[in-house]
Amino acid sequence: MNTARVLPWYYAATVLFLILDYGFGINIRVAFLDAMPVAKFGYYIVLIWCFGLVMYRPAWATLVGTFESLVTLIALILGMGMRVMIPNDVIFAENAAIVTVQEVINFVISGSMAYLSWVKGLRQLVKR
Image (cartoon, rainbow, N blue to C red; front, side):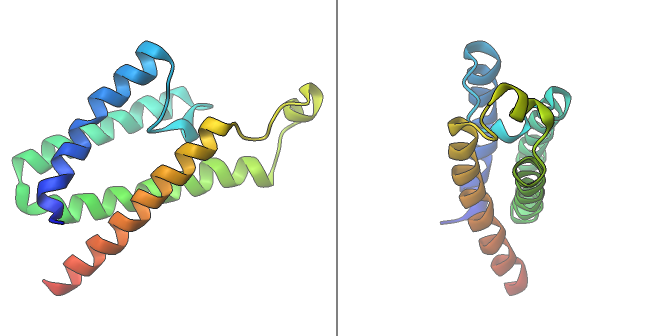
């Protein structure tokens, strides 16, 4: 699978994820940032920016995808890991879940795709 062909479609799907999230309340792409609405919107902007960059400079697709997947992995680890390792008082007071099922599904899907993209991107960059 060629990153330069798949990546623009992946980033173009950000518009669909935006509509699902803000239009219908179904957050699939960045559920790990639900607690931080400004960061979530900013992340969507970064993904749209990545789409523009990949369309403008297709030769940079591997580099952009590799960097973005690294950012996604770091955000997932910090966003989910910190909440699981350091639960706040609200969770105990309301007997609420530490993470929701939607967040776990997002973590598995986004984390898997980001990891595969990161590994594949590094391999392609090393070959150059």
